[in-house]
Structure formats: structure tokens, C-alpha cells
Length: 278
Image 1 (spheres, rainbow, N blue to C red):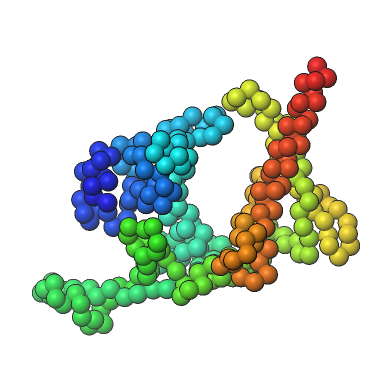
Image 2: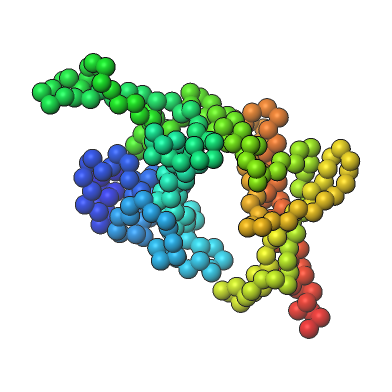
């Protein structure tokens, strides 16, 4: 890892390699099979990854670069965004004030595993750090997982996803501005085809403003409209595979991807028809 840092113009001390955005981006690069060096040669601290940080043109159809050796297409900007913004999002949504988080403000503090670190006194030597004398620091337990060069994984036993789901679902169900609609399925996205402005590449920037929802009990369709935006979060694609670590009955069939692709196809067909009519 230190050699990787030097290759990318970094003079990084060994202590910094425990967990830095650069270290995480390097891990993502290696796990992705992208063997070319990083584009960024300067280190970034934890921050909001804005347009000023972008290294690739966001208006290009396929943002990022293709590795000439492995043929893997990899978006380094996405990796930096995850590395720079990920920790603050975890503190914002899942951690409590004990870990510099804000979970109490919306009622969600996930009971991640913790460990104690001995605190050495003024007269203690280094050997005393291995002995617990009652004055310990209670901190989050970090574990090392595959493709990570440093222990940075917070967890709850071996069922972290379940613990997060239970905590955040409870907080959402108790929030006065959140409504749960059960026994229903989203069938289509609603688009304001006349409300968008021209996009960077000159096309129409149609805005998604809501979703059509089918009530499975009454077989009735209803339209739900968004105030700030529409987020597609259907749990991934694990359910389409024969073998998966997803819980039994977990309907992760790529519904979000399907909705987005169908909308893209519909808008593309509409655009082609308009061009033909003109």
C-alpha cells in the first residue's frame, strides 16, 4: 500500500495508511480490477465531493476511464465521493453523539459492536497499554474484511444489515413526515415532461416527480408525488441469482433498475417520435 501511495505522488506515513480516503480509493481500485494508477495525485481529507473535485466530464455518456490492461471501466470520481463523504453519512444517519454522530436527532442509533481500549497513565510504559485497569475508552469495533487494507468496517455481530434495517425502519415509522404504504408495488415512474430545463448535452432533462403504485389488496393504482425528489431503493439484484447471502424471501429483483430502464426507453421512444414528426 505504501508503494501504491508513492506511485501516485503521495508521501504518506505508515500511520496515515490505517484509514484515509486515499487508502480506501486504492482498495476500491484494486478490488475493481483496475490496474492503472489513480488520476488524482493529491490527497483529500473527508469532505463533500463537489463538482470542483471532478476529474472527468460528468456530461459524457460513460464517465470514467477504461483500464488498457484489464479492460475494466472504472469511475474514480465515484470512488473518491464514497471515500470522502461515506463516513459523514454514517455519522449523520446511524451513529449517536458518543461517536460524533447525529442519530439521536431522528431516533436512529444502531447498536454496533464496541470494544475497549486501555488508557495509559502518565507513568505507564507501552506494556501497560495491554492491561485493562478500569480506565478504558469505549469505541466502535472495526473489523478487516476482504479487499480492505485496513480495519474500517463497523458491524453488529454477523447480522449488520438486519441491525441497520431494524433501527432505521423504526425511526422512519415514527417520523411524523414519513408515510409507509404496505402491500403495494411501484409499477411506473411519473415524469414532468414539460418541466425540465435543457441538460448539459443539449437534450431534454425530464424530471421524475412521482410514482404510480398498485395496491395489491384492492388492485387499484394511485399516484404519489414527491416534494424534493424520487429515490429508487429496492435492495439490489441479489434475488436474481440462485445463490445469495440475502435473507429468504427478500425481494431483491432489481426493481429500481427495471423502472429506470423502462423510463429511459419510454423517453427515448418519445424523443424519436417527436423528431420524426418534425
